[in-house]
Length: 237
Picture (tube, rainbow, N blue to C red):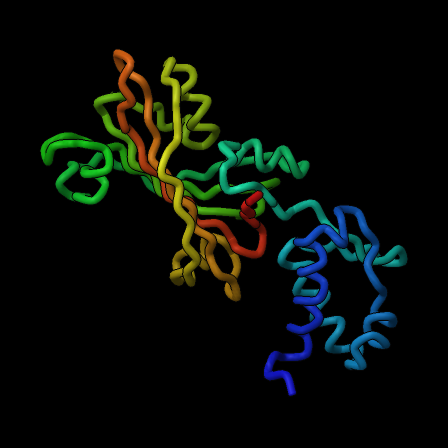
């Protein structure tokens, strides 16, 4: 006998088919009655599962019309350099940013970051945290460290928009290396920012480089924690 709650079984059944493409965006999924017949569960159980999927952005329930798959899940290859703004555009959403905090810190306060960016202890870092949104819905939290050697000053207003666009305006070309992925449970603060409790985080980190006199120079490190219900990374191996 399955130890998984019945409504969770229904959620997984539908989510798995959305993620693997069996139910593409815009697909009308089975009705409550059909799901009751399929699983043999009560209508209350089916309704709870559908409400949870709707709240998580997987489906949209249209009274009198049916239930449809939404375009709010991002699926991208692990080797993609596509930005968050481009991710949101790909699923028909408008990317947004909310600045949570900004400060300038000394490299010795973050020795692991200083090592990655090849900084001495007395050099400075811009450190800012941003909430990334799609059509105003919280999607991810990014933690960013930028060397003042390459970016001496940052217009804080740009942090409410596209930081990459700001770097472009400064003529700073970028290359990315060392991307890694981890999964973890969110802190209470992260749950509050993402407005979601029953989730895991999909965290992607990378270092950012630019070229100076033909040499690659590291100047940024970013850790982005996505709502795992809304983001999927896959390998094309």
